[in-house]
Amino acid sequence: MKRIIIDHTKVTDEILNIIMEDYPDGYTDRDVLKFKNHKGEQVEALEIRLNDDIYLVKVGTKLDKAIDAFVEDDSDDEPVDEPKDIEVDDDIISEDDSDDDK
Image 1: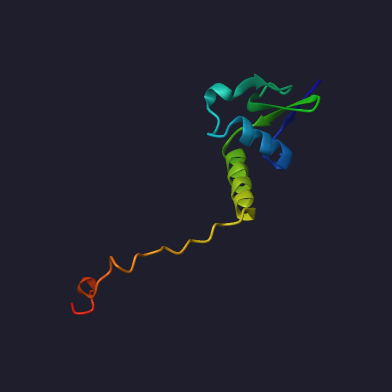
Image 2: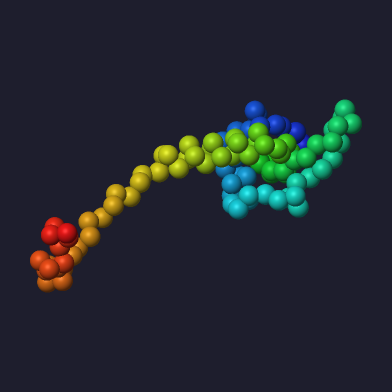
């Protein structure tokens, strides 16, 4: 099993889907792994398992924006329910209730 460190520019729709499934309410500090990379730099990432690989997706504002854009694009594809006509009982409405005289 390989561990692959990726940033927001390499995140695929498949990985974003997994992030949305695993963290439907968003991720917190408890979900974030902190480690040092081969350059000795501190990295914060989400661990996403996909097939036989583990993706360590770097977190930050750019990842958050990528997730927001993905959710927005996904919601644009869903059909919007048309507003339904409201049925009104004609017996309830009377001429005295109209605002035309005011």
